[in-house]
Every structure is written in C-alpha cells, then in structure tokens.
Length: 219
Image (cartoon, rainbow, N blue to C red; front, side, top):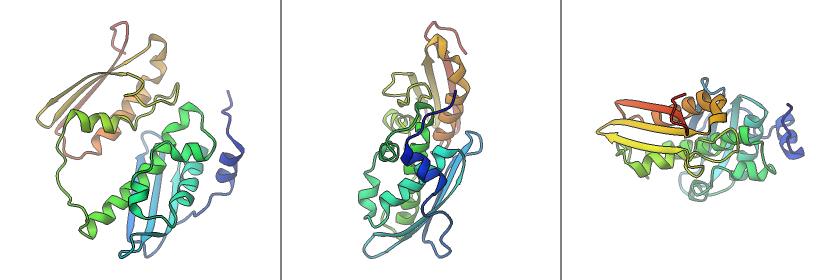
C-alpha cells in the first residue's frame, strides 16, 4: 500500500534545501545506521561567540521521509541559538511537514537528534560541556527509548507502554519489550532500532533486548 505524504513533504523530498556539506564546518554528526536503512549527516557552521547556527547542510542516505525531515530541519534551526535548538522535540520536523505516516516517524527523530548530536560535539570541543562518561540509569534508558518509534502507530515505545522491564547490572542492560500478538511483523525492526539507540551510549558492556508478545510467548 502506498504511503500518503503531505505536499510539503513531497516538496522537500523533490527539492531538498541545504543539501551538501560545509567544507569548513566546526560541527558535524551522523545519525542512524545502515542496519535500519536510514542515515543523515549534518555539517554546521556555529558562531563560537554568539552560538548562532550560521550555516547548515545535510546528506541523506535513506527514504523520502529521511530526506524531507532533514531538509525541513535545516530550515528550522538556521539562524537559531544552539540552546533553542537543543529544546526541540523529536517530532517537530514531522509536525512542520504536516505529519508523516506512523512507520516513518523515526525519520523525524533522526533529523532532530542528528543536529543535536552535532551541537553536542561542538560544545565539547569549545569546553561548554564536559565529555563525561554517561551513568546508566533507568531514567536515562527511558529517555533514549522515547526516541524509538513504534512503526504501527508512530508513538514512542515508552508512551506506548511497550517497555515491560528494565534491569541494569553495572554496565550491563537487560530490557523486555512487549508487543500485541498481531505486531510480530514489527519485532525485528523494533529490536534493531532499540539496539542501535542503546549502543550509542558507548558505556555499556552487554546489551540484551528481548521482544515478547503480550500472550507471554517470545517472538
């Protein structure tokens, strides 16, 4: 079945804004992975005195939604102070496009988080924030899992009440995620997305994620 896109989404897909790279960028980040099929790279020029984003460009390695959300996101942050951008929600790119199909909402997450990642690296470089080892807590894990979108309805796994159990043992993480019996087709995609997001913490020894149906049978 063909996905329905807004006219604004189609416009940004067919005529992406700020496409390319900045040769003298002072901030850069790549979000996503080949495993999930979508990646976006950002290069930014941030004024070190005013902390205003003076230029931003992107390269997309993914679908139409990946290109459109990255394109609109560059327009949304250009000329803004980095602290304002850091407060943006992960659904704002999708909202600015007039909405996305639920199965494509993760592209909005990638678009916004990619820019935030570039800003974070810039702040470390100039000493505005410390590059400290992240402490693993349940709250931190839930915040990360809020960026994983259920393909069926476009809601993150936490608000959708899919997270059944989180156990932390030192630097090891164990998570159980439950799905409805008819949602087995999404299990592999959700598992890969969760693993990708958790591995971005870069301070874990072992990560175990199990997907089970609400009937109790493991998928």
